Amino acid sequence: MFRLTDCHNFHDFRAMAKRRLPGPIFNYIDGAADDETTLRRNTTSFEQCDLVPNILRGVSEVDTSVTVMGQKLAVPFYCSPTALQRLFHHDGERAVAAAAGKFGTMFGVSSLGTVSLEEARHISRATPQAYQFYFHKDRGLNRAMMQRAKDAGVEVMMLTVDSITGGNRERDLRTGFSIPFRLNLAGMLQFAVKPAWALNYLTHESFKLPQLDTHVDMGGGVMSISRYFTEMLDPAMTWDDVALMVREWNGQFCLKGVMSVEDAKRAVDIGCTGIILSNHGGRQLDGSRAAFDQLAEIADAVGDRIDVIMDGGVQRGTHVLKALSLGAKAVGVGRYYLYPLAAAGQAGVERALGQLRTEIVRDMKLMGVRSTSELSRANLRFR
Image 1: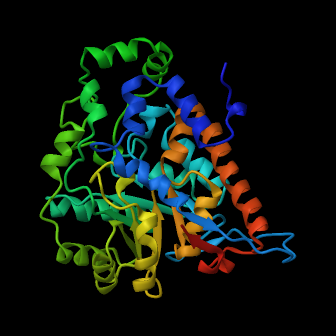
Image 2 (image 1 turned 90 degrees about the vertical axis):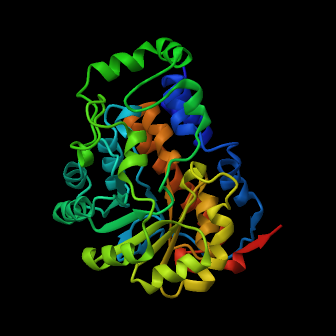
């Protein structure tokens, strides 16, 4: 029997999640767009960069804290907003919010989250919360959702800008995975061999999307998620639209999905306080660059005027240190906590985040740095 205590790294949690989840749901987390080239590149990009440690620096204690978009985080990573978390474990965002609060870091709630902004804010009230937002054709809905986030006490607005249409996720096509469920025969058979998941799913509260419950329905009565992306989101969104949102929010506002220097400069110009270099975990435009590969040139261009963050492919503490050394203020993790969530709920997420923190502390000591602010490109060499 594979136990939580047997999980010592990202790959162990992934293997445990694969044992527990029906194939279509595991592949929804695990998969990416087209040939999944960008998914693989997100992690291999870190392998092209080597750390150069310094010795005899008297490092007995280290300070892992960072300040990003005005928020003090105890660790230099945060839990990126991801959709449908209660599909993977019945506690979903509740487990992740509680774990993030325990480690003193930021937690993001998705527009397609399965726990309400208000409940998540209550659970992680001691630490910052971000709201990942999609831009809708209905401008009134956009304003209402932003006001709801403000009323809930959300500190950071994250507008996702790389998802004006859904990516071509062929693993989902092969099983017929969709929300609401419309599985083909192959997909149904994969559910049948994991009856424990189905029993758990059926014996807990109904699955819903509280941020969009009047628009998207898990039972198919209103709209499927695929139709939500194609019918409700606005592919005609422009910089002028975003500039108006930044003014209306009047607080910490970042764009998630920036990958070019030109776009980073535009984000500065319209008043954003942060940008997240991201390719959506390889789930949108396959063949695009890894965020880590774009980090140096974007940090050089705008890092003194806006907080630069990155996500994608982070599996080790050394990955976090490399990103910070290149100029990132913090690093987001997604699959890194989703596999542990699917495997063991809050206990799994806490174990994974604890291991990442432990790796960062140990690796900072081995690097000869006492605080994250001491990390620089002098610590790096590229192959």
